[in-house]
Image 1 (tube, rainbow, N blue to C red):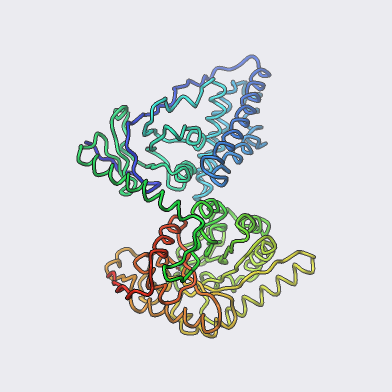
Image 2 (tube, rainbow, N blue to C red):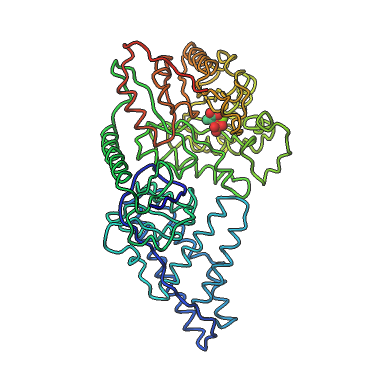
Length: 550
Ligand code: PEP
Ligand code: MG
């Protein structure tokens, strides 16, 4: 038996025979052509066919993986229409008299390199898209049928890397799992595999062509693959796989059900998302809304300050698609561990206690107002909550609301429509807990950011893994603060939720319910397991003891 490790895309088990995919070898000739017009026409035909194929893949991906995951293919179709890329390819044919294949190789490689050299990880990933569409055009030019890669038997597909197009072309009914040597957890291929519910390992350095035809098991829980597993291991992982299947069916049955305890207490279970690309996950996991849209990802995924229009489009997409569900968008929480190059922020000795989140926004008001205007405009399209992070005083909240009023006036003067929205704040510091009564007077909800609240209460840097042995995520001080926040919120008639990681800690769910929590906002895949737990809880029974974790 051989064991190889990789990064797991999905918690799940895949058992089956390996099929190693090796792309057909193609020789791209550097010979010059006599017939430039013919090569230009060949390129044009191949490009058009590739665009048609990407549009067809979009349709297939919508069904297999949902609209958000499918979006990559409409982007590909657009990239294939990009004037710079098309002109650069044609120029190589026209001026250097090379054939279409060679021109595609050079022009697309150049473009991909430009993306690969960018610092922004999101833009870096775009080079993979260029290689994907390059492959699509070359396949047409060489007459290669990409559908033939999988074979006709169920298999665990092993490849050096897979482009999103290759991934979505795979016949799901025959695909047990995927292992690639390259790739990243955030690549579109990984996202597609996750949305299709297929166990997959990426960055598995040890993949080998000699695995072809061997029995294997992907253990997505532990990020490894067993090639030629022992019968004992095979048996135990088969059991785990059966449990998974049962659990999935059980959770599916919970869709559409309320988060109500046996004795009748109902709370909201919402999802945390990083942007509109996660809307599909909210829907698939039947979250009641979005309790935390981390808007800073709109900034982190951008090469320059995102414009009001870009932000409006992102916020509107989430709010409109999920309406009438509540979508709470947290204003920009840049600073500390989240830095963007284009902001040129001065170095700080203590960034976690520095110019971050609301402090940054209140320091750079024009920057903040751009976001507030985008949010106010999005409010007309659904049910929006605007949430301010790291608030420590009523004065800060008041200033935020003044800026909101200023932006409202600016927009209304231009005749822009603004809808109803809630205003809330994150409770992330002991200071906010202690002045929660005065904060609650001026907002519609509290959402407790337990990640930062724990860090600032225990004085333990959340980024410093070497302090893990000192970290008690169930520390009584943090639990007491949560209780105090809920009580303060309720005294003033506002709802209180938790959007930090602790909200998904199922060993605390009963404790939170007893404290009177109104909402828990968690990673989308935790929504249904949490619903199950809530529905199995009976608050009339004696409370379970809360265990500390240190
Ligand atoms: C938190 O601090 O708990 C929180 C949800 O915010 P973030 O993790 O983005 O800082
Ligand atoms: Mg936080």
